[in-house]
Structure formats: structure tokens, C-alpha cells
Image (cartoon, rainbow, N blue to C red; front, side, top):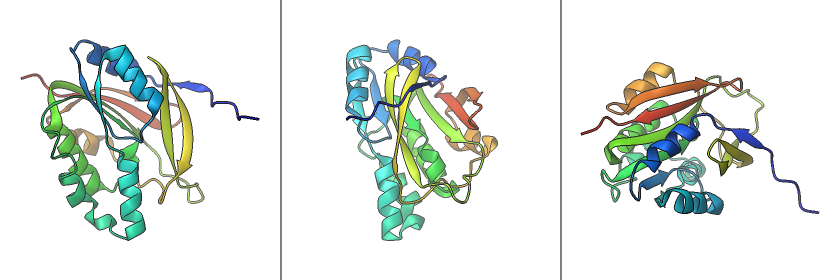
Length: 198
């Protein structure tokens, strides 16, 4: 018997992100999560997007298993060299929760660089530390519709790092700006970013 699909949960900042992409002709999207076929279909059919999928969760796992986590900031500083200033939208999901502060700063700087003027980004950040006995898992997000996703966990090589402070998030993304933040009952902060226009 096939297990039932997880219930859809609201992703409150997703409608704003999608609305911003719909204002653009053939937008380019950078997705930092694992490949999810139905998400590619959604963005292709609903928005006419060209999608780059760059699975940073796999990169983090590779560095953890190799014992080279301290090299992540340098790795992330060159990770998107082939994508230069041509991205209209970035889906960060919760990848920043699995990076220490230097790696998070390096990633944010690269995302700011690859985003076009008026580009948008969507990310979620934990606001409380993981409990010591929490299972080390990533969460794959499958878009159901404009306002909801299905969540499915899968094993991670390490658990979440200490949460980033709100001020740190704002500073490390500059010149990209926080447009809206939504603090959920689950202690997750959804953040919608926009890079200033030219």
C-alpha cells in the first residue's frame, strides 16, 4: 500500500514571490534545493520560467562527510560563477539554517551578485535552536499551489546550525532588501527579499 502524501501546509510568503515573477517575461529562477520534478513543471507551465537547480543541501552534506566544513565559505564564493547577474528569482528554502555564519555570508553575497535589479528571493529561517536530540534532516518542499507546499524530510549529514539573528540576515544580503517577514507559530521566519531596481 502506498503511503499517503503529506498534507499541504501554507507557505505565506510564496504568493508574493510568485506574483513578482509573473510580472517578468520568461523569468530565470535559481532553486537552491534538491530537484523536485513537479516544482520544475509548476514553474515551467505556470510562469514560463527557466530554472537552474543547484542542490546546496547535497553540497553541505559532501563537505560534512569529507570533514571540510571550514572550506564551505570559499566553495560558496565561487559556486555560481556561471550564473552572473541574470536571475529574477531565488528560492533559498531553509538552506541557511544548515550553514554557519561565514558560509551564510558567502552564500548571501553570491545570491546578491547573481540577482538582477528588481529580482526577488524567498527564504525561511529557524528562530530557535534545534533540540539536542533532534533528528538531522532536510525538508523537501513540493509546491502544491500558489500558497501551499508539501513537506517531506530526508536524512542530513548534520543538523541545523544556530539560528541567524534578524540583523545579520538583513546585513548579509545587502544591497538586497527585506520586503516582508512573517513569523510563524512553528518558530520559522519566512522572508521575502527584493533587489533594488536599476
